[in-house]
Image (cartoon, rainbow over all chains, first blue to last red):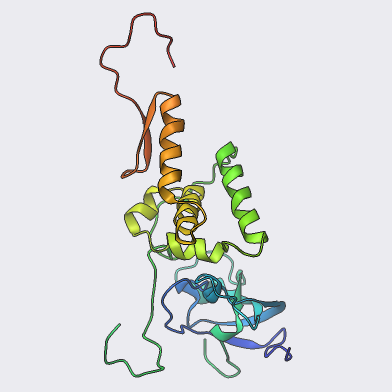
Length: 100
Length: 138
């Protein structure tokens, strides 16, 4: 298996890959920029599993940390509050100099 | 989704009715409650069917209840959605006919003088017009 594409600390943009059917990436994080918190391992693709296919090869899964204020324009909590969500590699793109 | 979308291009954003994060909603209920026996049993069955060679995967169950339609999805609770989807998948895979599950539900309800309404997904007491004299209350 190849090395994970992202490392902890990398800035990533969560994509909307325009896929119908069962996907695990909620609407509210799509197009948002966050930071990889950790690599969680590689797992069968749930979009394939949902159709009774094997979902292999396994896909890298990352925990991505997002700022609550980046998610919710009217967020009233502390400015450094975060949300972490696990995202498969094919829903991510590098976002080095990307404005959030 | 349009028929003239270029081949190999994403079709556009999809948002299922179940994807409610960020939608206006009332206060979130935070009550704790004890699990019902049927909830534990149906989850145990689901787990066994996943563990034994992935006969049924949790992601298949999610795909099925995400295609129930919004009304049925919202009618059913968390474990009810999973159990209902499981009966659909077991039927699709030729493992347990759904009709057999529904018939068994009716038989169990009848033992308790109740009846199943498969349209509204509810169990109600059987209407009793004139209860026989001396019959014990349920």
